[in-house]
Image (cartoon, rainbow over all chains, first blue to last red):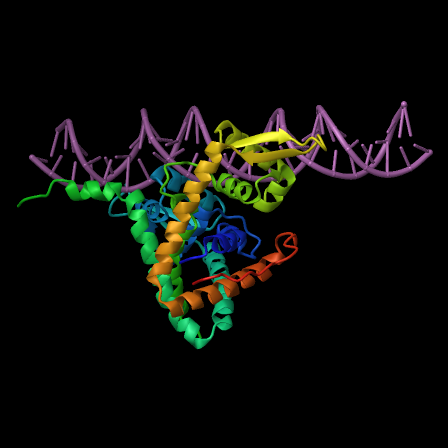
Length: 161
Length: 161
DNA sequence: AATGAATATTTCGAGAGTCGAAGTATTTGT
DNA sequence: ACAAATACTTCGACTCTCGAAATATTCATT
């Protein structure tokens, strides 16, 4: 059985910090959460199209447009139309954007390294497992909220050839 | 040495979920982060004055006023002036507010219990240790950025049986 | 007891971020 | 060839946040 009181006290004393990831970053930089996610996603994939972006960062297309607009103005992202399908907009990092992401990442790495260094070998090995378990639970639990559309997709008509 | 690529991939694939705690909650309620913190803080202390609130949730007083204003309108919080010093405003939960916090808390407990149940005893012990180490690092790192009002970092032990 | 400084809070106006609905441009299907 | 589908943007409304100025009360000093 869990000691709820002590645990939630600890939880709420500290969780605040987790909820403002923008502030982890020691870089003097004011990007919103969506903007940070966009930069990291673009870095990871090299090229991203608007609908993928919206999907991955979990916002409607209209919001994604605004996010990218700001990043373009800030000079971190460039926006082009696809040659093969001119409806599609492809975004990439500019050199400045890449530089920023690299700094951002090394900042995060620094944290990870600090944590890593603070753990014993045994702890490191178990940490991975725990991570997965926790995220699995979060995933399962969030299906109820976010996957109404997925359910509809499943019920949807099936093409018969 | 850390495998940065694998680790950050895992990190960014999942961290998104952590950053939107509002959505953990299966209650069909739309409270902002500040509003949730305010409710929880008020629950914990019974009575809170505006300046304490602003301090604890990390916003200026003008923002705190707005947050409380919304919660009062929603019927979750009542606001009174202190008898001894009429400048001071004291906030408390209404019955509705208390009911909501109780639901909110049991919702969070459910998550904690799920995670707890998914772990072996050994992993539980380890998780506790890791938690403290991580928060220590976050604390140290954030001191430079935010005010040092974290006067006393009372590190408590979690009781588990 | 009077008054200026200090304290606690609110009001106001502006800015950032988000979103749904309607609009534009391009491609697909028949 | 042309209506439907797709990819995206624009627009207006709304929420949340914040700093500066305003208000109200108490404290300190004379």
